[in-house]
Length: 293
Image 1 (cartoon, rainbow, N blue to C red):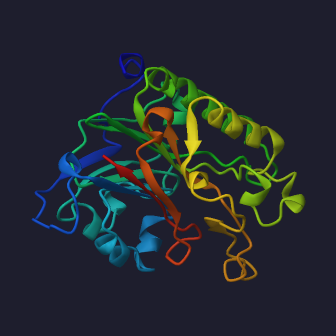
Image 2: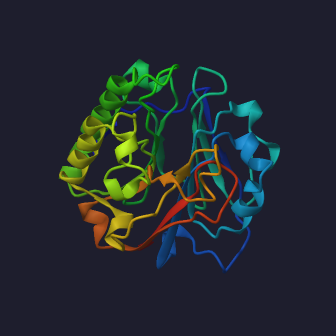
C-alpha cells in the first residue's frame, strides 16, 4: 500500500474523527473478532434532512459494523448533535469547501487505523468526495462520485466526472495489483447496464447512462473489481435512486447508481449484497454487503 500512501494527506479542519467507548452489545460483532461484517452505504441527500425522515432510528438499529454516507451536505457544526459522537461509534467526516454541497461521513464500530481523503488534485479534493479507511487488512473506500450534469442539466460535468473516475482508479490500482482487500462503495452516479435503469432508451443521452460513463464503469469491472450485488442476482428492476417527481419511487421507476465493488482479493469473502428500497429518508435507499472475516 506504500504506493497509495504517497497520495494521501491526513486530518484538516474540514474533517474530524470522534472516538467514543463502545457499550457491550453482543448483538453486533466487533470488527476485530467478527465472523461476519456488515457494511452499509447510503446517499442521504443531506444528513439534516434525512434526520427529519427517520435516519436516526434506522442508524441506531441497523446492526452495522461500518456505515458510509454520501452527499452529507453539512460542515462540522451543522452535523446533528445526535450524530456527532453517537455512543459506540467512531466518526470521520469530510466536507466540501462549498457550503451545503457534497461531503462524506464514515461511522465504524472499530477505530480505523488510518483515514485518507486526497487524490492530490485540488479540483477533486475541494469537493469532499472521498475517504479511504484501513481496518487491519481491509481497506474501505467511501466515495461520492460526481454527477455529470451541469447547472442546466446539460452534461457539462461529464468530463470532470470521468476524470474523477480515472484518477481514483489509478490511485487504487497499486493496491489492487498487490491483492489488497478493498471495498469501494458509494453513489457512483452511473447505471451500468440496461437492467440497472427502468427506462434505458429514454435516458441514452442523460448523464448517468451515457455510453462513455458506462464504459468507464465497465473498465473498473474488467480490471480487478466485482459488482457485489450482481454476484447474487442478475434480475432487473432493482434500483437505489428514484426521482422525487411523479411518484417514481412508488412505481419503481428508478436507477441503480449505488454500488459496493469488491477487489478480487476480497471477492471470495463476500457472503451477501442487498439493496434496501423499503428504507426511506432520502431519494436514494441504502445498500449493504456482508463479508466473512
